[in-house]
Amino acid sequence: PSRYRRLLKTELTECERQFIEKRLAEERSAIEQLAASTFPLAFDTPNRGIENASALMAAGIHG
Image (cartoon, rainbow, N blue to C red):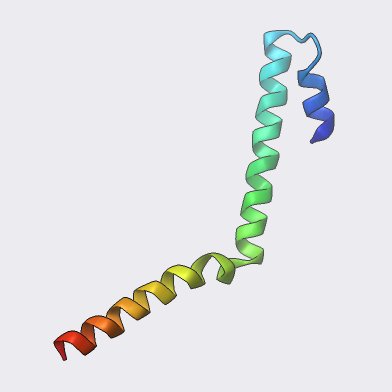
C-alpha cells in the first residue's frame, strides 16, 4: 500500500490515478473485512452489553 501512496505523489494520468485509488480502496476494504471476521467479539460485545444492561434495568423498574 505504501507503494501506491508514493505513486499518488508523482505525476500520473487520470486513468493511472483512478486505478491506484481503486486498488488502495480495495486493499483497505479487504483489511477491514479481515479485521471484522478475525475479531468479531471486539465489535459486538460493547453494544450487546449496553442492550443487556438496559433490558435488565427496564425489567427491574417495570417488574
